[in-house]
Image 1: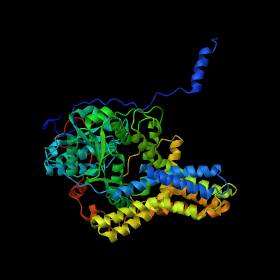
Image 2: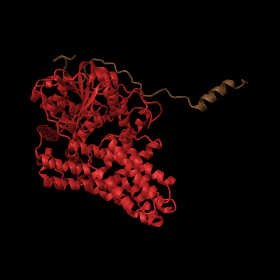
Image 3: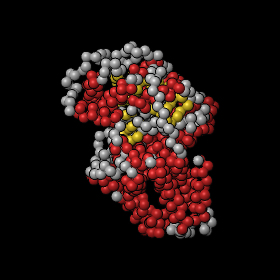
Image 4: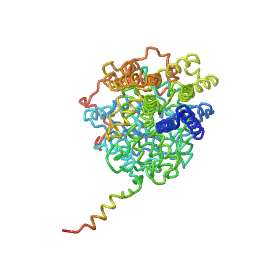
Length: 48
Length: 570
């Protein structure tokens, strides 16, 4: 923690990093039926 | 409260179906009843919230005296603001803390996201002036970000990531926030006293209004605000609101729980979260921290828009932010209540176009008599409309009666003067509500069409709007309302009385906007306690601002104080 007299007023903020992990707010998107179907079809497509 | 609102709304919907379905229930009847439920529930909930708050006892204000144990950073994010005014507020708050002998537990940090180089240069010069003004024991810092990633939420996050470890708490302010030292110290003491308290929000009172619109808003904020806040507090309990400023956070809790991700996709629904405050409150609650509203603490102030156009601009930003929360309704592990608050925020804006649709459905029903409302002027219909309107006015009248009985009206100049102000405020808000409804409907439509409104800086200086300026901002609603009246006269003249309460203010929008932006001639109307007995913090800030206003200072003056060092550009 900060103690009195450590800093002077000015441009430099205290150097005391604190991690701020990104929170999960979105559920993984379900693949739409059409996308899934297209993927399957693209795999099954004969290679020319 | 939720059950009562639901019961009233469903009863109304049944009455509406009975009044409209004489010849059997049609699709239009069902649509109309659904729209009625979707709009009226939230309106009744708001009204009930006010009534319950007005009938709840005011908790006593108990202030401690000892200096807080924890260290607090008072964060002032700025974005193209007038530095002279903003920094005069910081000076007044610092002095107020000094006078209490607790200022050694508080540091101020100005977190600039200002984009304009000219404005930034002025900030640097006025910051030096601020430091000179304060005693040497004061701790005031300034930094400007090279990029304003994540806007205000990103600005605060940047501070937490670089300097958060040095502080126990952070008091988040806006550039127009002003808080009494005793209130600030008490907030820190309450954080000391309850280690589970993650966030404590005060109820900021709007001050500084000079126009009719601004003074009306300030009066509503100071007169009805406490009752509505008690209602919100009773409803939300330990999962209370966070309004983004004039609130203190526990640094560790905030850092662990509130790192906001950018949402997938493009704006307006993807990208950085705009209305970050609601989300941060939900995330703190998700992590098990208490989020509370301090309804007993006064001495917390902010300024508001001085005219309806500026209000609508700010509202456009909030609208986009709230609608973006639709993406978060299914966010993992959120409390049910937090999801409800997101939905309430979304409906606060979605309700406007739904009201318009309800009106259109009524007109359509009359234009198609074989399917629609056989008698739009029926007693049932008017009773229903009256009952809905009552929920808008009833809380205000209950507050008036309560304050007359409890003696609070004396602080506002007496019951007679307050009654005139309440009546004038009801008339003003009734006249302007349809105009706001049009602005909000347009905003919702723009956002649903994928138009990003960006993040324009708040204009805190402009006030009076000429008729031409008001016309430029509202001609489209004037034209739309005129067209709607013409269509109704041609197709369903019997529904004209239902349209008039919305159409008349919309047609007169330029006049009403311009008139309400005029400087109020009477200081008796809409008088608030802070005007009748000006608190020390406000008086001190105004005196300082007046002193600084006479000082000629500019970026070229070279007046950078010797106590400063380092780079201003982080």
